[in-house]
Structure formats: structure tokens, C-alpha cells
Amino acid sequence: MSDDPIQIIARGPRAVAEAAAAELEADPRTEATTFSILEEDEDRDVWRIDAFPVEADEAAAIGEVLNSHASLIVTREVLADADWLALALSGLPPVRAGRFFVYGAHDRGLAPASTINLRIEAGAAFGTGHHGTTVGCLLAYHDLLKRRRFARVLDVGCGTGVLAIAAARTGSKVAVGTDIDRVSVRIANENATLNAAHARFVHAGGLDHRLVRGAGPYDLVFANILAPPLVALSGDIGRALKPGGFAVLSGLLRTQERRVLAAYTSKGFRLVRRIHRDAWAALVVQKP
Image 1 (cartoon, rainbow, N blue to C red):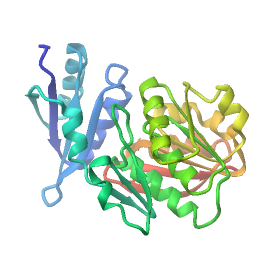
Image 2 (cartoon, helix red, strand yellow; image 1 turned 135 degrees about the horizontal axis):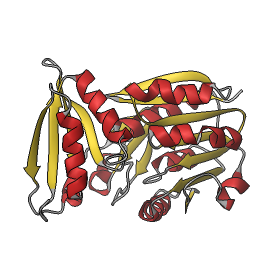
Image 3 (tube, helix red, strand yellow; image 1 turned 135 degrees about the vertical axis):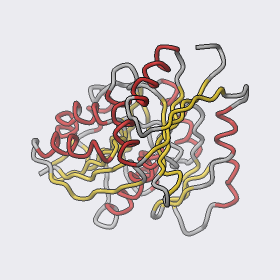
Image 4 (cartoon, one colour; image 1 turned 180 degrees about the horizontal axis):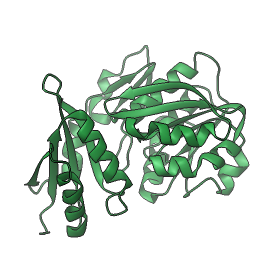
């Protein structure tokens, strides 16, 4: 691959696009690939995958996966030299999810007085509130708050920290977040300061960090990551929760729901709610 960044685009029917996206996530060669899937034309049932490889081998693997589906039309485009992160963030509109309103600095004047307003600056971290998985988690939390309050909350794979910050802003005395990416941890802590939220974020790959252990057990655990680590962490998340506690699981495609849910129901969890946003799913489960 040349030094010019490229974008690989695939268009096709929803079922095929979702299957291809699941394969991209499951394939060891592409499981770390940055990609999105969304509906482009509802009337014609056209869904679109946008993938952004950084290495030639990764680009080849993406092409192999997508081209294995005959009904997908796959194209490549060279991305012009630009500050894509700045352009993307400046064009993101604010998001309303239940009682939460998520916005960036460019939209600070649009925050309503009737919502819980969260200023989230993404930088290089995931979780501006626009992705279907993050919106799904916020909607799930909005619904859970109708039942009760959550004194102790853990956010596994915090990204920008939006979920733990939302918890801190709605009365959680303890709001802890972890991420495997040090940049995300820094950004999450900065966002906590911006929002005057008593949330703390640490660099950790699992639930063994001393802060995570010391602040538990938790009333609520958010895990907006990917399907394989959701399955792998099902036991740890169960042990981190109090009896009767809830987990909001996301970062998974609808096609991966059964696999993730099976990992948790096998440990005694019961399904409380499903939330679907585009091709993505969020599952709310409760520990017995």
C-alpha cells in the first residue's frame, strides 16, 4: 500500500453487509480494523461498510473478506491529505439519547436546559455518542434509571469516558472506567474534568487493576467493547457485580447477540432488554 491513506467501501444488502462486518471483526487479520456499517438507502436495502486499513496486509485481508461476498460491490478510494479527525468532529451534530444530550465544543450553545448535558471531546478516543453502540448504552442507562440509582458503576473499555461520566452526573458516588488505550484514558480524564464529574479512569486490560477491585462490587457495569472480549470477560464481569446488579453490554453486531448472550445466561444472568441501533445491539442483563 502506498503512503496515501485509503478507504475501502462495500455496498450491498443488509444481511450480507452484516455478515461481512461480523467476519471482519472475527478474522484475526482484521479484528483491529477501524470500520463502520450503516444504512445508505432504505428503499433499495443498500447498506455500506467503510473500512480504513493502515497497512498493506490489512488492506489485502479486508479486500479478501469483503470480496468473498458476491453481492457486495467493493471499491477503494484514496483519502486526500487532510486533518480527518478535526473535520469529522467539527461536522458531528449533538446527540440526544433519553435524558442525555452529548455535544462537542462546537455545539456548546445548543445544550437544552431540560437534559443532562455531557460535553465530550473525542480526540483520538472512541465514544462521541454518535455510534449506535454508545447511543444504545445511554438509552439503556436512561431506562435503568427509571427503576433505581446506581451507587457504584464500572465502565470497561471507556473510550471518551461518556458512560462513566453520565453515571457520575446522575448520582453515582463511584464511577470508574478502564481502557487498554492510554490516549483514551487521558481523554476520558480530561472529559471528566470538563463535566465536573467525579469519575476516574485508569489504563487496564481487564478487571484486575487495584482501583477496579477496590471500588467494587458494582451495581452496574458498562462494557461497550467487542463481542469476543465480552464473552471472555463474562465471568469477571459477573464477579465484579453485586447480586441483582446490571450489565450493559455493547460493541456487538445484531448477528453476534446470541453468542454474547449465551456466555452470560450460562452464568445465571437473565436478559432484561435488547436495544438495536442500525446494525448494532446493546444487551441489558441482570445478575441473579
